[in-house]
Length: 307
Image: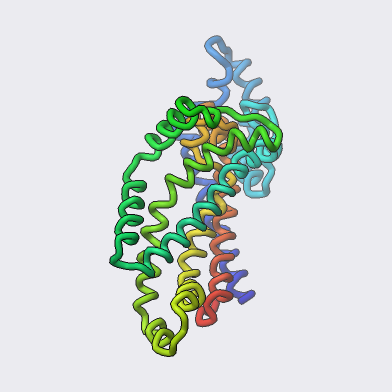
């Protein structure tokens, strides 16, 4: 196993280098000179050189490239603040919404998928499946705007938008985004996991367990659920690295100052250090979590071996 992990880590290095190179090329080819953006309308050659020196863009590209790979990121152009400090301020806000929403959504997806799959062909199965398809069909922006209008503007149960520090104040502002995120994501997961559960229910080992007199609940939650864990782990581990970046659309519409909103603002402001930092760190976590997923496969299913 250790040889496999080391080999995967070594293979991840060229992938990270390629991601950094592509991001650099996008900034050089598509984006304008940051000094011109931050200098304003009236600028001279001396002013541009001074701004480039202040922003650190006069450093050779190869040196900037090495600094990023070694986690030495330049301060944010816009905030004049360390990107690590921005991460410490913005990521907890995104996590306060994404983590509860993710685990509530995952729990509902699994419970509903097991429930309707065990009652295939019944009215409950058709009803839950229909609601899931309808939920998948609604554009996410329409769902966000509709929730703001109904729960924030009409019923006035939650704030329409904004954020406030402090646990209870933050919970008040985060409640509606969490609810909307769960509603918007449950449908697709129920459809996906229902299909997987149905495949397992029709497997030979399930028929054998039922023929031996094993209770239906034990078959469903012990035998079937255990074999469904691999696709669950795949979806879960792949999504987890993206939780700290937040939802770009949700944070923009609900005016939440999280990491997702920071990424959108930084792209518009040509804040290269912040964009590079988010892209690099997210890619790194994503690659590490893929390796972690392979390790978990061996724990969930003894038939899986890492070579």
